[in-house]
Image (cartoon, rainbow, N blue to C red):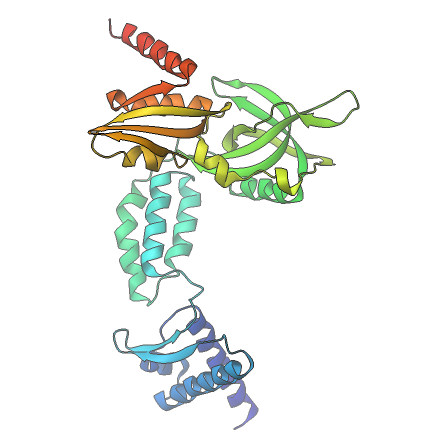
Length: 339
């Protein structure tokens, strides 16, 4: 075998190996047409890959990868190790979630979906997934005044990891021409109800000229409303014990409205409290009667009021008293609108 033939064989074998690792199917007939060789050459390439994996197992007994023929897919696949690529059903599910979220501009979304769909295997499934999302993709409506934020997300993510103090200029929700300036410790990026949010502790200088937290809980900034974002050249420290855990924060927040952390007790009227338990991950049933459930949960203040009001007469707040009174006052104000 001359050098050119060796190079061609090595390239062909490596190409198939990479695709097998990605979870793709190798069909001998398709490969022979692709590379311009007979099917026996493709079979020898597969045998070489098998021999390589056998040798790998002799060095690492935990490597259980094998190449087997799958009759349903009419080709060779790798088993024993999870493919690095998403499955077709995963690609379809993620595509549907992205479309429903309305998190990106139409241009951003098209780019992301095209990259996802290109990962479908075999090739014919690419068109199937494209067709299944085509209508939603065509009728996709951007949010009002939606901005490109992908690069901003990455910059913020880097500053969270590097613990950089940053200065932001933030547009107020009730006045697009009014800005506030803040120095913040960025601690997390969250997504909720169409938007990406930055969780950050607002800081200000104390008497010794050191930055300290203004509040003992993080503020929430909608990222598309951050109009000016830059590092100030200083870092902040966080001990491991006091680190911010966005997963725990997420369990207690509603509609990305912060406020003080509090314990609530409510009564749910209905057959199944599942909607409450799903919505409030910290919720626990402490008492049950026929069609009545007493539930306790730990939540942050403001957003929970909005969600409770959305439940109509299915939910009654029992404690704390101030939250119960706030709900009553809000309902009385709402009634005035209909008189």
